[in-house]
Length: 176
Image (tube, rainbow, N blue to C red; front, side, top):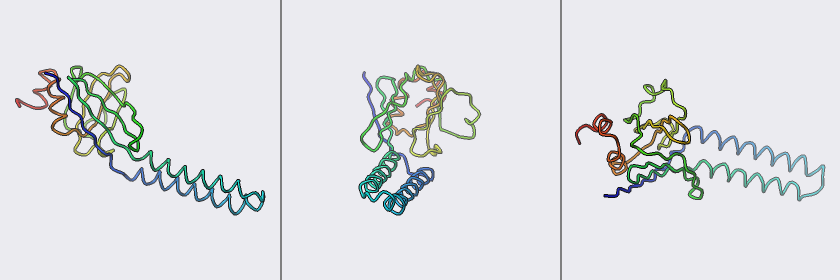
């Protein structure tokens, strides 16, 4: 029987995102101020400050839109794929691997997993802190030993559970 489930989660806007957007806005306003009050009197050409203003407005839009992230988890017959969707326009593959190769899985605890030696840590959950998230530790062809933190719903967990090795499935989910 083929198994296919997918889920899209929207990442919450956090303090880091607000600081990045605020910094971009301040930089844009400084550039606009310089172009209007310094460049315009020096050049006497209104086209240059107009281009700077248009560039700054586009830059602010670009920074804000790139902070709008969603993650799509899809499980197909034991293959877990995580894609990052940027501003509902661009899709980028984050990681893809066979869950049969998973070494470990469970509820995410940042303190317990902070000292774990891995080649790559991927946070693809609702929040960057990994609150109410799960983790899976597996070897991937692209990154090597990878720690993936994600926020799956029950359907995605069931799809992953079906592909896990028997002992790991028992350790994580019990006899269910």
